[in-house]
Length: 212
Image 1 (cartoon, rainbow, N blue to C red):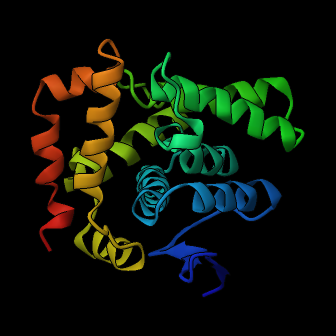
Image 2: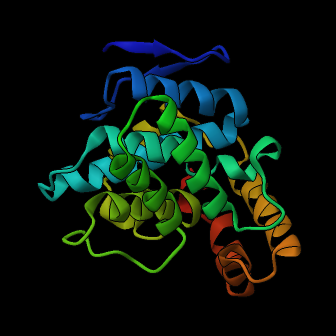
């Protein structure tokens, strides 16, 4: 199995249980930026979100833009980290702006830059029909499974085990709930605050991925 070097001393698999990552400059740049700015638990979350979403699509025979999805998955939570945090807009909206700037540097056309931003914003909104927007749905599926365990039952145990073995959780649930609480305190009208008003934190801290 071909692997790419992870700058924090680990390694990024180009494939996990038959699900591959895209090659090319855009994907590697997104991986490098995420690895540089996120702590390792958040970095692994972004990678697992991609693999969950891509596996969901492959199981259903859905065609999707693998590069667009990977770049968006690797950037989707970077506005939770201090260098990109916004005190005025929700983190997913700030993340969308970050994606637009990042992809401009790659030379992506305006429409494709807007799509990357859209995926990141929509991952915190109501479910998107995959027939309407497959990549946005994949980011919702991937992040939901990895954060709170929502929909996790559709993934086989061997796939889940292989994914967590390759990209360990490293206390992700606890640290992610703290990040959302911080967002909710400073931006009480945001989507993170609405999730915390329900049982999201409890579900996240009891994710079956952490019970193995």
